[in-house]
Amino acid sequence: MKTRFLWKLLMMLAVAAVLGAAVMVLWNLVMPGLFAGSRPIDYWHALGLLVLSRILFGGFRGHGGWHGRRRWQKWQAMTAEEREQFRKDRSAFCRKSEE
Image (cartoon, rainbow, N blue to C red; front, side):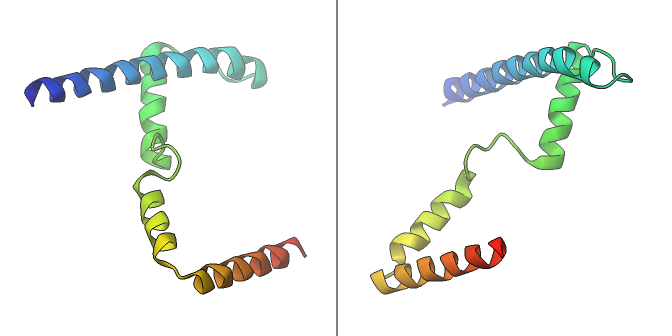
């Protein structure tokens, strides 16, 4: 159990390190050329930017996180008629937004 926890912790730290390096490289390649007032950042600023974006936007969860499973369970619990009604309501809503 302890070994598994340590392995997960090390993997999380490794992923954070790689993502921090990716943010730094991308920032330094794009931002100074795009905006005249911006300057290149170092690794620690990139890691801070990554943490800040995590706090503000709640990212890194993939597609739906645990919410996706709940929606799937709700869909599975619907009858065929309920699913058809859901599709009709959804398509009507989409058509309204296009107008």
